[in-house]
Image (cartoon, rainbow, N blue to C red; front, side):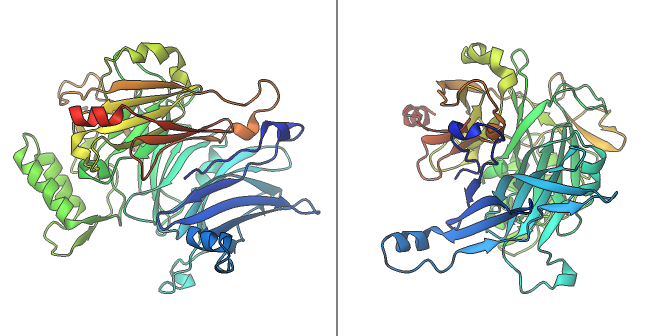
Length: 459
């Protein structure tokens, strides 16, 4: 569900309170992040977990609510390297699919009012098979030296990688997209890209973020190895949405049947040799097990092939309707176009802007794509270059804007809007395929796309 809930505007007088956060894992457990300030000024941050089935029983008077669990020990204050006390302001909660870990993104402030971002992964369930010396920590501090050396960098989005609960993907405002296996190393990313949607090949930090959000593709076909990115600006005839495929975290578990189908399709397609080689390097394709685990690979360990940042062409007139607001791109959500969830039939993409919701469609399957550009790395970091202008790129898929929904918000103009900064979310309904939700400035919108069955039938 939603991981962003804001207080009402009436509470914004004076110092804005920190919003609470709520989300749900695939098992039906609800998680709530809350903060309470003690009399001595210190802040306690906790995560409360409750199984929704138990909550329903309690509401019906069937049983007492016995399995409510409160996770404390979340870092709320600490001492910096120079001895100054720093306080954490946790702003974001993201729980893994199995409910074993949670991502917390916070802002750390010291007595000199200097703020830096921090990312923690909190262990919500103890693993009896792993002892403390083997890494069974209560929480993991992600890339602490990086955030200390780049105080202006903020976390735009952080999510758990598909197929594993031990790796997270993180996009920061300085243009870097990282995959971190925190059980192996919290100090260095396993994979890292400098997002370069404009093909500038510059190592400098952009004045404003060029890529503002990302999401993983649906778990079907090559969609399970695809990451979609939302750019801040939209070029002429080129959509603000881009993608990279294939990307996978080490330790990610994938059905052998699915991998065999992808290998078979790659053998039948023209130029599918690169995709087949990637599958063989990443997975043990000879294994007879029902599930195969991805090997550890660096971003440019694909035998010399660098994964390209794929463009989408846009020819819809709806694009011109909202081109002036392209700098207001906020969040992105993706699902399969077909009702049975097959990613090879295309995708539906919802993008949230400052005042509207754009629903777009890609009616063709996405395939892995590698760039042929010679200049791919700067200072040892792989640059994810756009396929725009790449003569060797395959035909560019077309992204058609299908619907534009104007969102009316209850937030009042004037005064502080800090409490609404993190209240931005767009998400497809898990059970009703034609419904999506959007959270913006304290308002939650439910949108029914009644035209979707017609589009599916036509496709």
